[in-house]
Length: 271
Ligand code: HEC
Image 1 (cartoon, protein in one colour):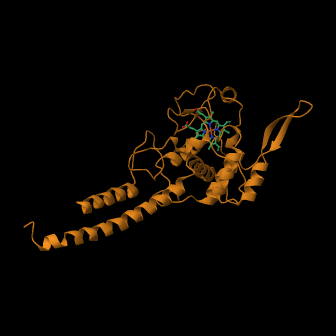
Image 2 (cartoon, helix red, strand yellow; image 1 turned 90 degrees about the vertical axis):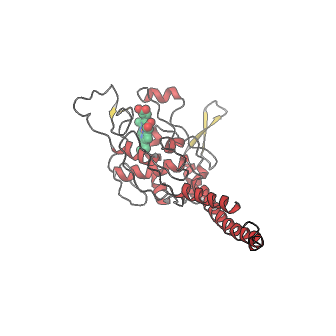
Image 3 (cartoon, helix red, strand yellow; image 1 turned 180 degrees about the vertical axis):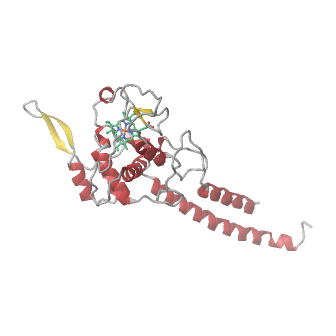
């Protein structure tokens, strides 16, 4: 019985960790290979750093990143000094000085990314009534979740890449776009209030990678996924430990079970 239970646990664990559920989406999305996919996949740190650069130079004009503090950027492979320097490029309000003038101070590692707009109202006013969603959760919000995909992102990053790479300069024949809307193949209803944010060479990558729209889209999608789930790597490492532990436990239980019942079986008590 014990053996059976532990075997069942093994089978369920194995099923959960290796299943690659192919859930379907309302739109035709291209599935990309992501280094962080799968139960043991880890982030590509160079891609994360490039994604941060795209966020900082392009997206942060409209999208906030409320839940990420600068100090967390060490997870992208930066040293604490680099993080300090990065934070120092931002300015934060620091009350009033003796003359009643507003004071500013440099950002510190413990500060959070500042929001581009002071309020939701201001954000909507600048974006034709639409609200640019906060990036902290967006990386995962369009994910296709199922009980078999605890370690797998199915559509989060692919959806973001889709949004960023399927704009049409003009709406197809017969499609009437509302005022201030843009045609996007991936967005539900195909009309989005965000103008295409990326163009060839929108950024000049610090690591020299050539900045095609697709490249920037993938990098920023990786960054957004990390921002939505900074603990993913730790969780996967823990998952691996649990699997190893369960495997050892199963083997031990198998032998314990065998030796406990050995005498009974030899005595043919159950015949
Ligand atoms: C000029 C402002 C602006 C910039 C710059 C901008 N966005 Fe947006 N974004 C918006 C607005 C507004 C929306 C909401 C669109 C809507 O609801 O129709 C949005 C929505 C989105 C969405 C969500 C789509 C959905 O399913 O709701 C994603 C993903 C996105 N932006 C990614 C990005 C990325 C990545 C960048 C940087 C490369 C970026 N945006 C730059 C204004 C902007």
